Length: 149
Image (cartoon, rainbow, N blue to C red):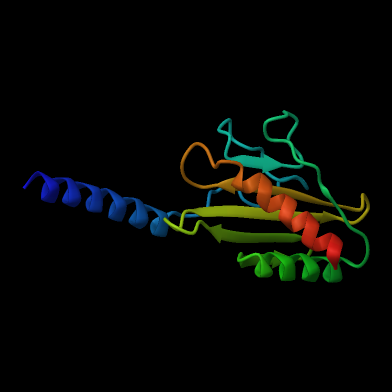
């Protein structure tokens, strides 16, 4: 009897988490504000090339060339990595990645600053506090894929 109760509680908890991940909406601070990506929250589940603190800071990705070609390369790499492109608007891209088990959404934003030769990046979890460095690794994988092309 106790095992059935524990199973029902655990199953309910897991279904609730899964449901939460499916109904999560994109944050309102996505996109560019005066040419800059949003700041990361204080929680350690976000990285940004425009952050000033060491916990959230990650190096921008170097790039050069025509904006459309660069953004097409970014989009192809993101798709290859399993991301779902939500927006491409000139030098700006927004994509969503989902975790394997609970399908938690993470938002990746890229902004190509042609004059600086940089792709500014921000990758952040929508839910939870820690991301176990998944967003940092995602940006590093993107950097590697773009250097291969």
